[in-house]
Length: 535
Ligand code: 3UK
Image (cartoon, rainbow, N blue to C red; front, side):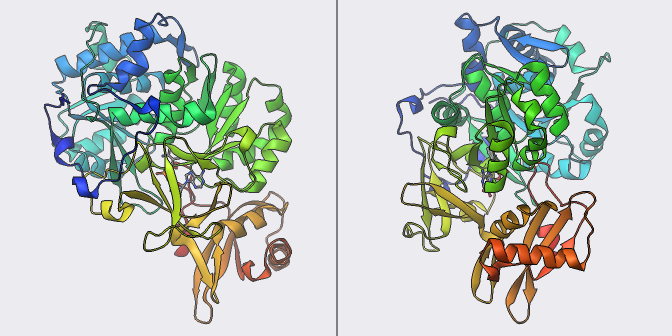
């Protein structure tokens, strides 16, 4: 294996071999050669094999074929290497909402042997700065609309040598530079284990962690979950809400459609309304979004039934059984739930429509192994709650971070989730290991109480935490956002408490209930329970 990296920062900052998880390649489709560039596989290959005129990227007033995308990615790779001084192994910040140009930039960077570091469009300068620093970013490509925060972050980051803006037409724009460059670029012949992307994750608590993924990892996720669970076809049209800066979005909205020669829709804004409009406008057949979005959209089931939508993927947060049922009743479509993680790159436990079970995330995805373990790493009996441990072709490699020792133990990735597995190998999410509530000695999983509350017609959204209590250790406290028109008073508190007592074991009922306008969420749609602890 020969690394193409001239800049060896990524290689130098990998976790020591003994701290890395085990990697398994136990499927025929997981046999990779020594040299591999995932952009060559996902983009160039379609052109070489005669599929260059298939539609690849759609957006309002945009329709790019695979050839169009390759031409643009090649021009960008030429701008990066010939005008901006990029050498293979350099880290390139990609700061943009989901637009066709962002996709072109991602492939331009990866073709040139660069390392793509995509960041959430809503990040402020304060949040961009540590990312520039941790990943030692040397080059930046930024959507013009986001330039204020980007420029401000750049001021205090001397390592950032070159910055270009796109999606505007000024003489100093990336587009103007692309005009000067050729559409021909020879994709850099990277090693299969050269890093091609660094994905940041804040988890739900704040301090960013950088995860490193190889060219091989990108191809591995395409060979596992999509091939065995989603089973997409070239005729599919993908759409969804997660940013490409979130690996859920990168896989679902760019890598997976391209791995089968399908097309994908880029939506800059993808709230429930824009998503439904997009599904109609582009004839989307596959949608990726989070549980809350399905909850909201279920109110428009009859409209959705008249679209071409046929597969709906939910990830990022636990899917409440009530939301699965709501969606099925409203649209006739069974949701495909899947748990993934930035550390694992994508989904490793899931179930297709035919094998979905209420309340379960699914079974382990082919290519991966999963088990439920105790504090000593021993497998617990079937039906017992413990910590989820996984391993497979992808896994956690934090960039120079002590937390590697927490996430990876004895070769297994510990995701921080409490799960139980039943006799059929179905995995049932309980809670994050850090938000299990212990009240008077009872273990109470916050999401279970949330599910019970959400069954009440007056509840729009809710979040449950354990609040310190001198007598009981902790008590169950619920933050509830009510549906419009419902009065938030003491009688409503009593109603909800009684309702939970009737729905689940009475000891789980929320002894404290606080009404709120809305719940704190991350940009990836995750509930920030830790913020509620201090409110
Ligand atoms: C939670 C889920 C229950 C779980 C992600 C799909 O979410 C993704 O990555 P993150 O690093 O967060 C990982 C954590 O999120 N989670 C995600 N999906 C589910 N919990 N059921 C689910 N279906 O706590 C996990 O440890 O932001 C999801 C693909 C790629 C991803 N990066």
